[in-house]
Length: 618
Image (cartoon, rainbow, N blue to C red; front, side):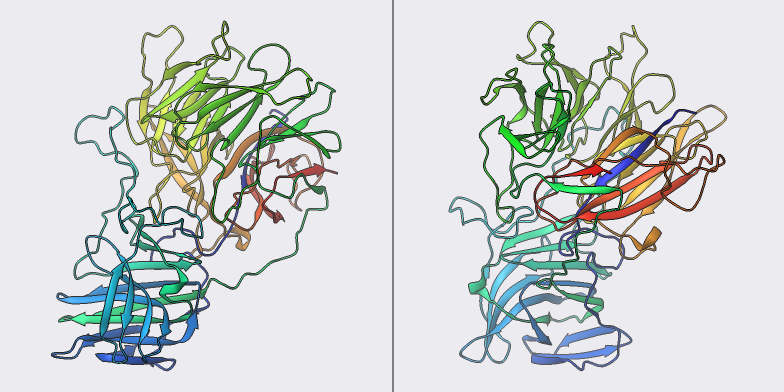
């Protein structure tokens, strides 16, 4: 048995307002859930009848009336709302947020209408009788930032979020569906639907069922600063709400920073400059250094830094760095000095090579060596067995790897295409020997590609469909995927987060039938707030996953010893920047104990920051 142990490490972040879940449960932990048969704490406005029974609220417009409102007495500014609802034929319904009183006795606020073809958001004004005076559709606000960007006169109004179209089928025969098919979008007629609305700062987002984000709209405070939530019913059919859950998103809980007693945390910089980090001995003094964003931090004390390119800090509430989503360090030019490679799936940045100036006190020369990259994560691994790493990525709907031209390492790299065209999304990529043939295969959320034998004339690799991700309210795929024999049965399994913008960490156990056909069985390690998770640990946004192997050192990490009487160990250094739009970072490790051949899970929160930090093993 080898002395090295592979660990699946996730730098994670949790913010209650952001993230997709499953079933009839909110993604946030609610402050309150409606479960009774009384409408105490609510009041009505307008021409509708409302009643409650055993956690279900029913509303119906009065005959000949214009509909009415059920208003929660407690006001909110930033709020999360979740409910299951069922709208009978002829029914019109929606939710008003920040329902602020107006000088004429009416209300104004942000209204999300539950109607096909999309979940449109409006600025709404009502009179004192709850009748609509004015409705203006809100403009589209975009991605994950908290504050809506300034209005673009040429941009369209509010529109639903649309995932990139599937432009291929990875070479599957006609009629064979891809794994991870997106659930049907839109309202289910005369059936239960789930809606989650998150109104934070100046953006309101809505998620309908499990089809992804249904809308994102700019909700400036002038539309309504502070007020209660109000349910609406109009038309000729009744509406039923259940599973109603509410959370005040303005309230934050900050826990003290905590580091395990075998580690010391050192913050490298107070500002946020980039997404990622890498390590190498850049000045060749025999000590490892760290690069993160534009700066190299020199060991052994990591207090001295030098720019490799001109950088500036980012306000993560409004802006993201787009030039270094992932950083890699290696001597790509072959001169004995480690260089830096950054990759970005934003725009046409692609991959940029920064060449080490061999100790000269200046910024580094840069070269674009790959024009387009589609995947948020990229990996640096030896694919062809030549002892040098290749860059593994997705672009233009296909899976690829690339390596420098030895004759011109700063020129365009040599790119090999592995797959047919298909749904190569931003999230989820892995490398490893899945089938045990000694060759390195490539994975993503839609399956794995088997590397042909050496000397084969096969250009594209054989595709094996497998759902290594899942749709809920976000698309499938997480971060880096691990290929690793979790249970010690001699077959490599797959460990991966299921969604980058959602919940779920799982390992997929490899099985083989009598004909050696490979299948996988999914085992959840951690799911969402509705499930029982090991140690009571639940977090989301599993973007920052990394797979590394460290040599073991014998010190206990739990009270359970292996057959030799010694526990397996972890020697872990986290040198990743935190996802900037969230609150916490930490480690989540999965290991196989060497003698016991079973799995162990360990989770600890190690810090809170929006800047790069380093954990020293003590």
